[in-house]
Image 1 (cartoon, one colour):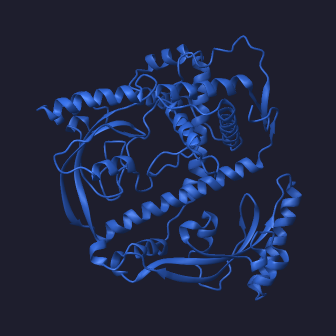
Image 2: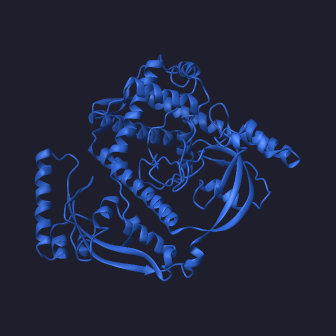
Length: 496
């Protein structure tokens, strides 16, 4: 994952929505990620590296373990509360909604960013609360348990991430107006959701050798100079399942889909079956979805067809949030190559030796203040100060004891904002303060070199990138399915 994102819904975010979602992430007051590991390398001791292998997490709406802001939850204790939404067997109250919106507005003010219109903010926050509640209930329904010992370890982790002792964390929580018991309960629910996601999404995503070959071919790796990425034309027959369908109706619709599958496997014309039976938008075209790279297919479809030969029908019905799908790989082709005329060059990469100083931002360290402090440090260093000594004294990253040294890094290993700033520097230069989701950095490039990337390492990086893409798609599918299966009743206009 190249950056943390808040992605409950597949929607195009307006500028203020992107600001809002960034603030939601910042509100938890913890560092963005723990230790991350690049493939075929020892674990890095810093959070700015992009996860490259099975360590990849998809935080699109994964709960964040953090510290509530002081005074954020006790403001409306005297108000008569009301229900604004019902989610299955629980409710969301107006007090919860307003308190969460206030927290986000406070974060925006701290970061000197404009807040969206209040009505828009409330609508977004209510949807966020609904999705949190849906996932929490799914974890509880799945019987996932978190022991007191596991919860204590999670609390210790939160305290360490926020540079607090466990006692200081408790004081911070209680100062916010939340009882320690309630904080533990909320944290337990968040850990349950993370465990559920790991079981239902992460563990089921696989990367196939053919996908890695296609990925490398698209980038001219391993001698595939003239070959672009493989594209798949998948046709589907969709038997749609209504949101309010009973179990008996679902079974009947599944049986219908399995009957259509048998007909397709028996030689019936798939296009005619789709035209007559599919409820998908491409039914009139015989169910054909058109040529797409494997990464642009829904994850469930990609897993079902990636190993099929053209003309073959997937052996099993695929179930999604929309219903049951019968799939056929109608054709497969190699797209024209794009900029892959020199495979030898594609196997060489430029590595950068870099070091940095990080100040993490949060409720007690606004971005503007972190920028000011690092600006002062930069002035000292450029006038003769020692970068490594400053990193040891002031950096809040795991690399601090090494003078901020990150070693030799390859393209794609660091989060984009950091990498882009690094790439603009000449050896010896120090950047102006650079903002990423981890905080604010000073970056110094020490050296650069050209090096061969071994075929094994090329495949490692390709595998990690493909897995990350599939995890995102699979997680989005899973969240949408949970949402479609939940009973949600809004008691208020969501824009008020």
